[in-house]
Image (cartoon, rainbow, N blue to C red; front, side, top):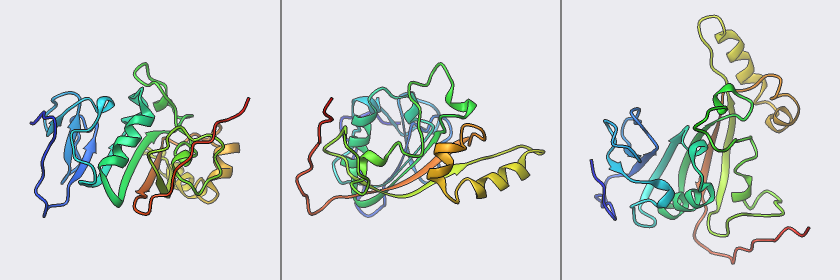
Length: 201
């Protein structure tokens, strides 16, 4: 396991990070975590920054990590910084209405709309970051079940994702999804000046 100021990688091999992987690192990914669990390759506190060069990472995956973080905007800016242009950030988080969201170790909740402020395609009045810009490629509610609830989960996975915005606003509190999956693309290149519009009280 490594803990460095900057982590170097061979240029020819795609570099994929599993952020906050704990003991369950995704196959083929470089595991990054604050604690030196078995399988963790890079030990660092992500809330203080990622030890990778800008535009050096091909893909980032993070599952059930962001709900534990205090510096959410900074972390999204770090993800953006290290990703190469047009490369992918995959995120799984507990849905706000799921029992999984309510833990003494969680400090924030997520909805279907949580990452819209990073996508200029959505008319957001206030944007917390003028550095990170992503295009939302996919948003999906995720249900899962055991032996007797798998049929319910299968039906809900279909129904909830037909009109996800409507489902989030009017139905999700009654039939809570377990998780939400997001797939984002880092938008870089022709850089327009990004403005943060201040909300007037």
